[in-house]
Structure formats: structure tokens, C-alpha cells
Amino acid sequence: METKRAYYLDHLKIFLTVLVIVHHVGQAYGPTGGFWQYKSSLNESAQWLGSFFAVNASFFMGLFFMLSGYFIPASYDRKGFKLFINDKIYRLGIPTLFAAFVIIPCQMYFYYSLYSGNAAMHFFQYYLQIYLGIGGQPVGFISSIGWPELNFGHAWFIEQLLVYSIVYAVIRKILPIKAYWTAKKAFNMLHILILALCIALGTLFVRMFYPIDTWIGILGFIQAEPAHLPQYVILFLVGIYAFRNDLFIQCNKKTGYLALTLGLSMAAVIYCMPLLPHSITAALYAGWAWYESFMAVFISWGLIVFFREKTNKSSILLKKLSESSFIAYILHYPIVLTIQYSLDKINLGSATAKFLTVSIISVLITYSISFLIKIQMKNLLSIKNTTSIKDPV
Image (cartoon, rainbow, N blue to C red):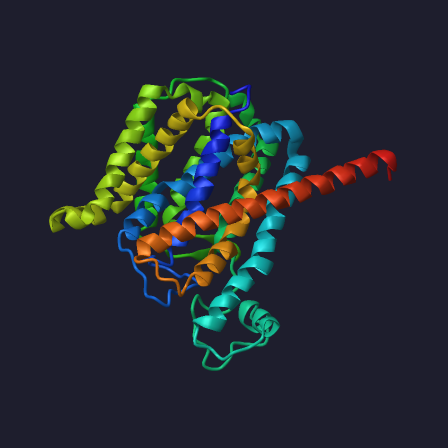
């Protein structure tokens, strides 16, 4: 396992966080295929964003889970079962609840007031009756995502990561898994292909019952899109295994660059689909579970190696961005909506121009606010620690 700070993984998380922000910006200006809380009054539409969404969705959250899994074993090794669980509840559970009961209802009320077509009501009435479902569904209610509207929104990732972490901790408590996961082996293209095949088979099976963009509540409260769950779970486990066996280091530059080339080539095909014969596009759609799975694994491992080779040096700016990325992920959604709505009446000539403009502004403002919050959190923690030392309870 790596003994020094893997800066490239911090930088990869920054890249993925920015990609998530930009992905959500695009929802207002492209064929999202789902629900978005803002609607352009100028009817701005860039069809190429459909390809952008498809490529992003194929890999970026799965890669997030793999990176998260990578850091799990060392955290458990340092803290042990009880402290590890407490830490995850604090770091992941509280932000998940904050999103579900503070951020998301504000976003949903924004949509309810401006676009839903329902009778006007003040926020607290909406919060209780529509969002939490207290008092019964109003007569003539026009549904957007169902009733009640309580959901975890973009915090589904944090919620699932908390669940995966707790399951990992319970298994570690029961079984001495660490003892069996320490043999370092070379990681080559054959392993990448086998990994992609396993994900593809699991994905193909699940999508027989749950198409893409179908969301359910596992056990009634775990918000999940089953169509991508095989990828997320497998890559999370691969991340754990990768830490014990130094797979991110064992994967050599030649293998990583080949994987990235294959992945980006497959992504390029998606962007070129409007130019391809119908027979080819039909075959691609029919085999999407296979195509997406292999593209996701190629791009994910390719990016890991690329960032390892090209970005494994830190700087003050990159350090600050890395430290702020988790907060940026939590807060970006309402910031994006605010900027989209603020620029709603401004015609920039095309949906693409609007998309790029809102993306840049959203990333800058989100990280600026996140950085300021991070500073305040550090100051509060410093004051708390100082008080504890001077006046122990």
C-alpha cells in the first residue's frame, strides 16, 4: 500500500467533483431524461449534452466509489470499529440528513413554486404537507417526483457510501479480512477486462428489471438507482482491494494509457452517434450495459494512471481545492440552480454558451463558498481543541 500521500487521488477527486457540478449544470440545457428543478424560459437546448450525460454517467460515480473504497481500510485500521462507525456517522450521516431536510426541500420548493402548476403555499406548509407528507396529499396535486417529495437528491452518493462503510466495518469486526488481502500482484489489462466483464454481467442482469433512471428506496430509505448498483458495489470493493495490494501503483503506465485510450475512443463514438448509421446506433443501444461497463472501467483506470503520472505533486491551490471538494459536492446543487435562474433571461446566443458560462460561474462560486466554510470549520475546531486543553471537562 502507498506509504506517502497520493496527491494524484486528491486531484482526481477535484476533477470528479467539478465534473459532477458541470453535469448538473447541463441538466437544464440538454436532454436530461430525468427531473430537474429549473426550466429555461428561453427553451435553450443543446442536444450534444445527451452524449455528455451518457459518458459521465457511465463512470464518474463508479470512480468516486472506487476512490472512496480505497481510503476505507486505512481509516478502519487506525480507528477500530467503534471510532470508525462514529466517524462515518459524523462525516457522512450528518451531511446526508442536512441535505435531505434542509437543502433538498428548498430546491423542491423552488420547483414547486415556479414550475409545478400546483396551488401556491408558503414554504413551511409545503415542507410539512408536500415534502414530509404530513396531513395528506392535497386534492388535485400535480406530481413531479411523487408524493411526498422527501428525497436525498444528490446526497444519495453520501448515503450509500455510509451504508457501504458500515457494512465493511461489521464484516471487519466479524472476520479478519485484512490478513487475507495483503498479497501484492501485478495488475494488467487482463484484470481490467475481467473486472469490466463482471460489472457488465451484473449490470445486464439488474437492468432486466430496473432500467436506467429508475430510482427506488432499498429497505425503504436507501435511495438507489439499481441500474448502476453492480458497478458501484463492485468498484467500491475493488477500491478496498486496491489499497491492500497497491493496485493503483501496480497498474503500469502502458496499461493505464491503453485503458484510457480505449475508454476515450468509446466515448468519442457516443459523441459521434448522430453521424453513425442507424444499424450501428441500434446495436450500441441494444448492448448498452456491455458498452457502458467496459467504457466505465477503461476510463476509470486510465484516469487513475494518468493522474498518477501527471499530477502527483501538490500546491497550495490544489490542497485548498481538495480540502473543499466534499463540501462543494454537498452545496453545489442549490448554487447551480441559483445561477441558472439568475441568468435565465440572458440570451448568450446558444444553449452551449449558456451551459459553459453557468458551469464556470458555478464551479468558481461553489468552491469559493466551500473554501470559506472549510476555514470557519477549522477555526471552530481549533477553538474547541484549545478550550478543551485549557479547561478540560
